[in-house]
Length: 216
Image 1 (cartoon, rainbow, N blue to C red):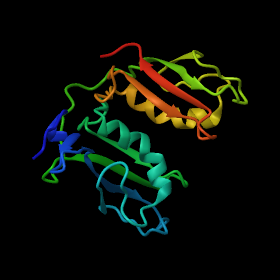
Image 2: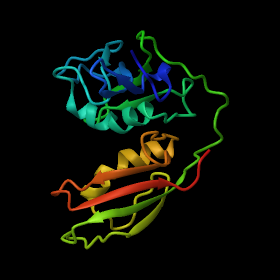
Image 3: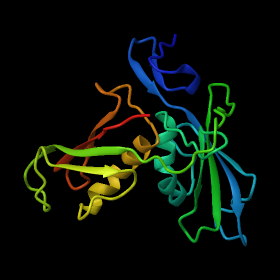
Image 4: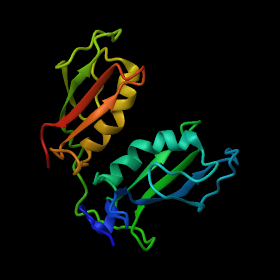
């Protein structure tokens, strides 16, 4: 028996198991190779190849980690409701191999039956519509090299980087900033326009939260 708290069509929700524990489910994703130049890829991906991921946390065996890393913000955004108005199917996005750009993939969401979820573009956007967001330190053990303290804040617009920010911290923050810029919401949070618990990779010395200050 399934008891979805979110949109069941998008396969994001909570499944109530027989032992009454709830397990969060995420959408399957399909990667389609749309560009492959000069037999460049040692994974031997070819145009038209399709790769199915059980969700954004479960890639197939031997899937290229370079692509997974480059595509992670896109996968995470699609999973949590981010949409891309510049795409004909706004529930999809294209991303490029970071190793020379000789390969490209289209990423699409799949429903429970394995069909591509299509959300047609209503109109072509006139240009970017960057959102204002706020990064805040919600926890610090006060040993951070950068001196970050609880309550420190930065405001950002769209994908512009905060000047002088710790690169390791921003690396972890970027997927959240990216998806929130494109409308993702986190229904498991008290405020779906806030993502908490974004943790410094250096021993968890600092934890951040991101809040979208304006919505569509």
